[in-house]
Image (cartoon, rainbow, N blue to C red; front, top):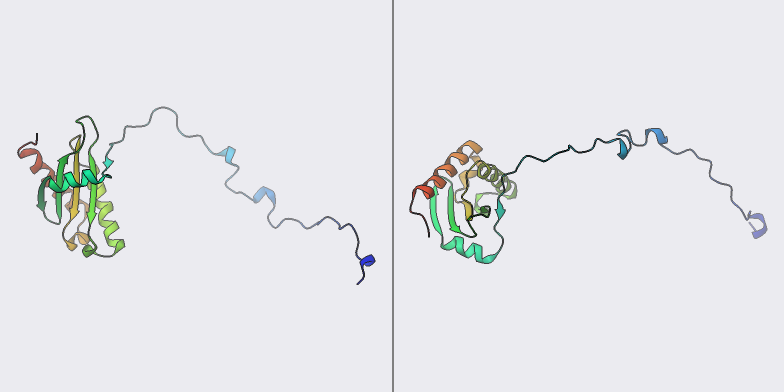
Length: 157
């Protein structure tokens, strides 16, 4: 094939698209989606995370209670008007990553159901591998008992 045999201009492709445009997005265009609800949202229970090393040191020195598969340490970490802070510790001895994450999710839900004291920090540890088989109602009851023992005990100044 020589150079003069090759056309200088190529014709436009006339092939139809594989998906017709009317059926390309069956969910409709983004404009068709409903707008989010108006007005204020319901208030959420706010719990902060424990992040800084000083807070963890304060929790290590804080008051400790143990019951069942849980151990809870608590200390004053902030002003009385601040939300409570919570940290979770699930050791590798409890099980694999899937089991540890499942236990941690149950603990978070159990903590959401509790009345935590503002300005305080809580370190919730799982101390027994049997926690993997412990359901949310049992964790909730155990946690409620431990937190109740803190409130009935002597107050920190």
